[in-house]
Length: 355
Image (cartoon, rainbow, N blue to C red; front, side):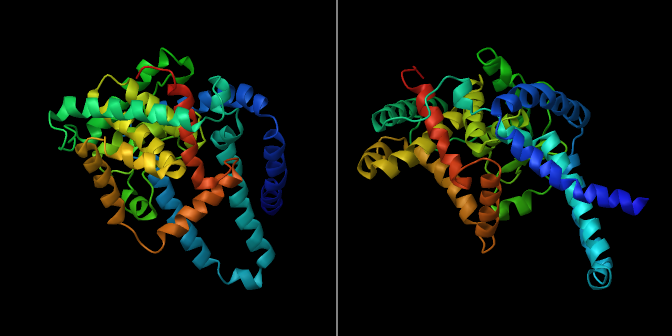
């Protein structure tokens, strides 16, 4: 009886996979019945249940799962040759449960309607529009920077601990909710990851645990980057799976926060993305823009670059390549490059707006 159940569970991955691929062809259905129907219920349930814990429950589960998996494979290594069929059934039973849970609790959000359609924004933009928005972001970033430091050559030092930054993240969403009711954020569950060191060497600032719905932030990254990263992970928590969309919503949440340090982090975050695109399209104009940015802002950018440079290692590209493949398999064309698509959302939202 137990063996038959395992076989049934193992083979259930096939209809589950086919169902996901079928539903992926109907983003309106996903948007209505999953992203705005089932998912908000399960997401809030996890957040209210686990959010109050001062530690990351999901990280503990991950660590225990890794330890158990290693022990299981060592213990059952001889079965690969002696009882390969049943060994394979055991492996696929576990994979099937993980695959179904992953999509049920989170991953169907990859197939929802694109955010630009919900916001009635264009999907593309002109270089002229990009340059105008970039100039506005430079002006805004310079003004906020100077208001904080009183000296354009000094980098901004956040007066908050990372725990204090986490506590302030929901304030930005509360303000943003007035314009976008769908971004209501209740049931805070943002944690400093217990796996921050391996995350750093893998090259990641944070992640959303899809099985516990905890927003995990790398506790080692510079605090300047911490505000937008935490805001980005909350966007994932709210069901916006695409990285470019989470970046855009994270920008909105940070810049709508009344705290000036969050605004600084948000506007310079948006500026950095736009500058990368300007450089790709018009390197000469990029140099002109760069010369007008307060040196203190560039020092904050340099602080982040040095952090990642100090943790570069031979296996980091492998993790990025693997994650890029994962993104492409989950409806994000371009993989890791899809992060740059946030510029289209920024330009089309900010064009003709007064920052």
